[in-house]
Image (tube, rainbow, N blue to C red):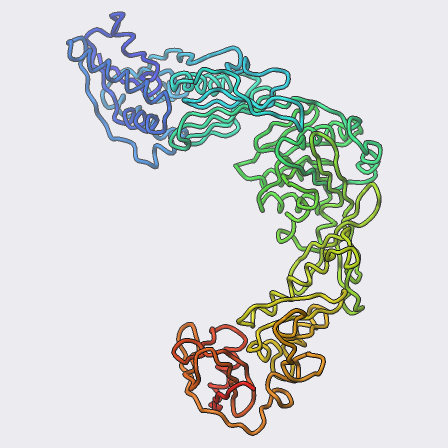
Length: 636
């Protein structure tokens, strides 16, 4: 008699069991190489089933040595592609082929495999699968108390837990005995098996080295090597269930949610109570005759049975969103809006007319809104999110109202600087606290509730303006740059004397361009002119120290009659190099056909180097291309 066991029968030890009871005494056991390959793959992935199967093969080898059975290995090993498609039946097909070719009985604990084999005319012996690691209750439930939010177990460490009330959590040791690797493996297998077998649980995600289990109201992450450096189990459970009435601004928030479909971001730090508040909102909306669904990965919100919880369809939330649009919910609770794709899905659903409530990690209320910047068009943000709720220590700390208006941003004065501005106002006081708008091609978030110059600190718009001025000037200056604001529409920029001409540009063109973009009048001076500086000399030009006409001594930067030394610039991959007849540290002016280009300081080796790609280098290279004569003269 020939017997071909499939992988399920080998893992369950059904062959050796029959040899020991005498029913398979003297049979020929034909083991397909496909079974060996699948067991080896499972063992390499750290799965207990793989190791159990290999132990069964060792027992069969011992029976062969005792002369109780004949043992042969036949067939082809499955390819990597076949192993990856094992769930689709590729490996099972190889095993059936071995049974058919050897006129053998197929021994299997897989009901589908058995039925397919019978349909193909193969003799089959089906045995019930072994219930492996079956438990009735969660084996780590004993570690939880009424105040325990999460339990943390890892091989070779003492069990720990986060316990306490919201906002006052403590990370404490709950057992002085370190957990062994054997104990951790037992707990991990029991948790995963319980989720598979119980109607109260399911496996949210299963990948090499990581299983995410949802069992009742517990979300459990089971990590194993090689993904983790040891077996680790992290179990999280909500410790509070609330209603909207339990929070501040409850009446106002109820009215706001019921007024029309909203776009809401619920923000806060980890463990602050964001999901608990989201659950309360979901239940409130459901009780007020709104069709409510959730989008979660993993699904762990504790909501009533009327609210359907959706995961990531095909591993992608955009697929879930497409399906939900066919379901037509009034509101969707999107838990864990974190990656760019999440924000895009949230935005698409909101623009489709669905009320959206998203849960976002953020350390400040405004940070939640800023996470949309760069991910969606700036002008669309108020249409996507009109309310931000910030949760701290389980309480509603701040609520923001988000609107848009075309206006001159606060702190600027020129009427021609009007633009679309997103206003973020405190819901309780109605007072705007932030403005978000485009400033000098950058999106900026400006706080409005800070004191101005009279209060001793810069305003938010002043800080932004100062940063932008510094960024613009440093892009062309070589030396140190200081910026001093003068009111809301003026500033003094202090630069090295050698940078004056570069910053101003020919005929003041460069500094005028910067002023036009920022809406701020800029006075350029040398560091020696700064109060408390080393001197009071002017950079030339305006008596008041504005270097626009100067740095050269003639109109528009033209330098009198002094001709200077003619140089032949060398263009390298990174620099334009001028070999000048001057000492190290001396200041010189570079001209093209007598027209001022820039001022520079001579470096080591008597060279002036200009980085390619800079505005100065572009002007210099343009002059070289036009075969203009490049001369260098001492700066005046």
